[in-house]
Length: 66
Image (cartoon, rainbow, N blue to C red; front, top):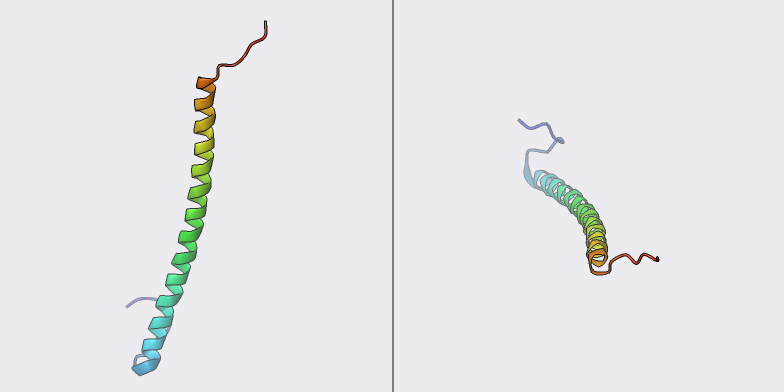
């Protein structure tokens, strides 16, 4: 048997309780996925900027006065 919330065994109350539990888990998963996407996009932007800087450094050699 699962350790979970007390779920009524019969009828509409049981169905509603299970339905609400699923909706709550879906909402939590949605929030977590949104946060993970936000972190991934921020990391991707940092990597893109770093790659562009590295590429630009190879294209434009450092100017040394002298």
